[in-house]
Length: 239
Ligand code: BEZ
Image (cartoon, rainbow, N blue to C red; front, side):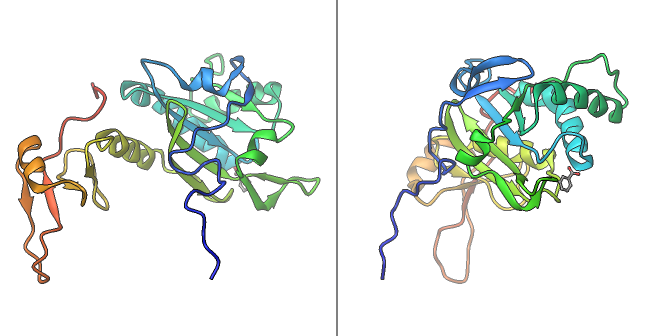
């Protein structure tokens, strides 16, 4: 049997440092790392969309625009991307704002990258082979990457036909912040405030000492592996 390498070449694998691309955006030119590393907002949602002036993307951009203050409260900034020009992004932004019943004079609350030569989407494997433009060239998928500074912490990849749920993205961001470097984990369907799981690597004595209201669930196997504690305060201030 062939041996599988432990670390894949996927540039978006969890823990990878994202490459430092030169970015041309609606808020000027800068490098990816310059944008990502910000002391007051170390978290970033970097998300691609298939095309400007398309209906699902218009709804997604409008929702994310309105949620920028909520993400900012937890130290997170946003960066969009598609393979259109900045002029196209500016013109389309007016439609996005109008769709949200906002003034077209307003500015979209985050920059959008113009990846016209497809360098970034190709290097990061963000293309959806099933969705093509009029020339038959694949469009970007709905990739979304959550980064802590320059480190990839989570990725989701949806096809062009399925819009993302930004409430779910806020939920997973909260989980990432709450479980960073402390051995905790959040269970399925978890929401902020609910009990959290003590991860398998954490010793019971450590959990009892460091977290509130430690409990072990009694299970038929008799194995004491479902351990939980009260939800700690979130990693970044929430109000
Ligand atoms: C949209 O954003 O509406 C869309 C884009 C590509 C394929 C399907 C839908």
